[in-house]
Length: 253
Image 1 (cartoon, rainbow, N blue to C red):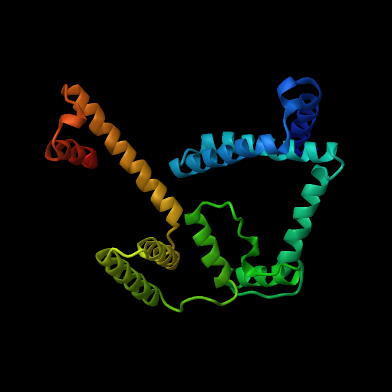
Image 2: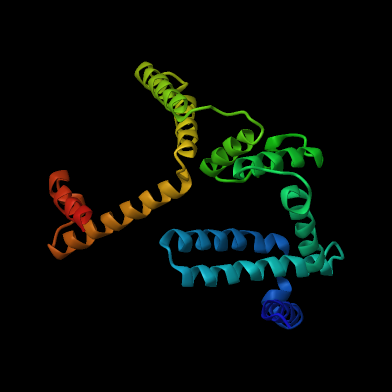
């Protein structure tokens, strides 16, 4: 028997045991698991950004457990089981890949994505954007919105046009700041949205880019704290010039 199937069956059997024998697992509901699943997803994201494949393997296991857990609860409520979940995604993939399982021809990945969005509309989605989760973090949501509308041809032709839009939005934002108007927040949002759009044109994932900058800043600031402590200094009592010495050392490292 395929080792992959054996491993998956082992997990399903363990899940059955946990739901009947473990007090904590027996108590869980989809609602109680939800925030834990979100946390596990972010932990997987951290492992991917760190390039730690061993940690990726572990976090994938944690997420797989959650998927099996939800399916187990669904079967107990006679709503669906793991077979329904797996067959459902298999059917969706077959329907959404007519260039593999049908007679449609595509020339590149962009045509694949465009066909995907058109097929979703045929399946009953009222809007191209209906598949964007409301609870996505704003930066990720902006990326998904732009990617979705691109699939139906609503997009700029060249990256230079997008950069012109970025500059236009920055200029409008600066004007509102100088006036002290109540449009500052809206214009700042427009700047971010246009920058995220430009990132797409230069093949940069804005969420990944920002998180890597966050990690870089944290690492450098923690170095600053550590070195200042070694020198017997308190950050709150140091001048910015003094702190810059350690900050520049951190950048060199």
